[in-house]
Image (cartoon, rainbow, N blue to C red; front, side, top):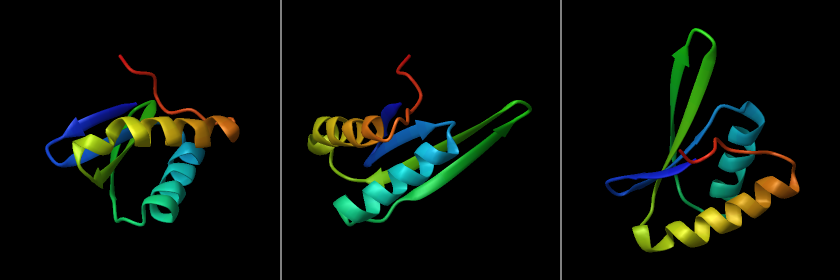
Length: 80
């Protein structure tokens, strides 16, 4: 799932393999830093990847990253 917090594009997943693939893509393609917030619940772990990037890039990143993950049979959380 994609969202925005101030100057950060936030990507949320509960899948550890999707987390790894997403961070590889961000670092390899965007060549930028990021940070990960981990939230633990009794039966769920959420990973939020914060990318410092302008809002004008959101749609392009969403499209390219979704294509990258789909090709690897991985999913982020669905938009609510």
